[in-house]
Length: 142
Image (cartoon, rainbow, N blue to C red; front, top):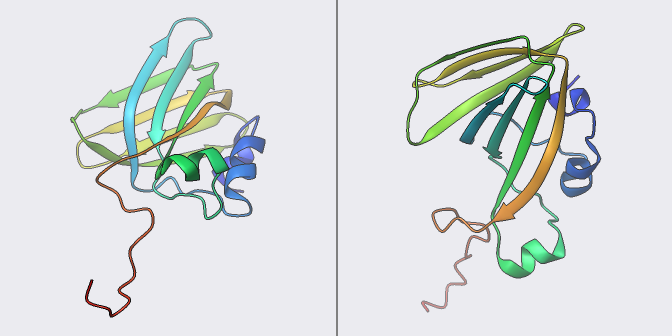
């Protein structure tokens, strides 16, 4: 069972990525928000892969990064150690009746327990530091 099978609403990401489940290894972590309502934990993540057949709007705008927001509900425990300004992390989500979230990198370690995980937002943007359409050398010298 992959991480997307644990999400309550995987349809949007499945439509965008097709049969390929985006990996959660080498993910760009942009934000972590803890809210007492629920309580909830919100993670804003840049996925490390881009869909082979992105939505037309994304293609037209030259977007090359998919950003998702995961919302964990019914959070009962959180532990966070470390922080950095540029966090590339590995995210692991498992379930044995309760969801266990583990985020790890050389600079950050986080563990959380929750009852649910939902994709609360899917977006895309252009990251000038990433190549989306690598230019192939035609041999013309131009």
